[in-house]
Image (tube, rainbow, N blue to C red; front, side, top):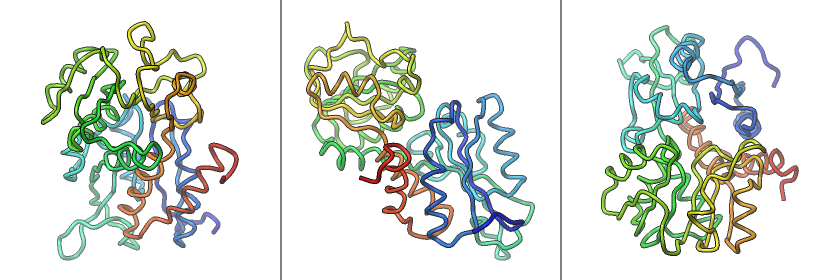
Length: 298
């Protein structure tokens, strides 16, 4: 339906953001649900994150998604944190809420005329999405497996903690800033966490860095320290380009490979359900993503 004065908005903030396929996924889904909503994408430097969240709140946006590098920063900027955000230590979805007449906080879609007293409620929908995507795209079952995780930022931290919860056997952490990897390793429970490259073979190499978004980016790992021929599978959270240099090298080394399209789909579907209170039309969202990233729904 056409945009008018009653159209409601959601958005994703990131730095960079031009690669994002979230608008292509969410707008058809919102239309399929019969909502007069639009989903936008904004390039946002992390220095401006707090004011941008406040701005969306003031303009009575329905909600926000956050991508690199905002997920950790947003934790202290929320008025309320869902258990998912507290558990995984990162926020990738914000739902704006207002108080109903009974004093309970309700999502803004429940109000035809939202009041001015609005709060930002932070959630994390990444954790379940990553393990679901690994199972569906790579037939990877984490329990007892060995994983090399590249990156200990917002997405990497969530992946590490979720894999630990799922019973992964060994988790090797590599990050540009070693101290951040050491801090994450200390948080892991019930899993052997190691900082640095493994000496033996691993079942999965998972790239949770942003290296690969740009054509000029280096590989997210040091080929002199680790050979992809010692890995069975490789997953890149990046989905555009659909085949990063990392995934190309992994395929050439004989690994099973998958990009982050499945993770994007499932975290986005959960975010949409949090905003709307309705079941997300996953098939429509998947088809829209495939067309946007690959140019085909096949």
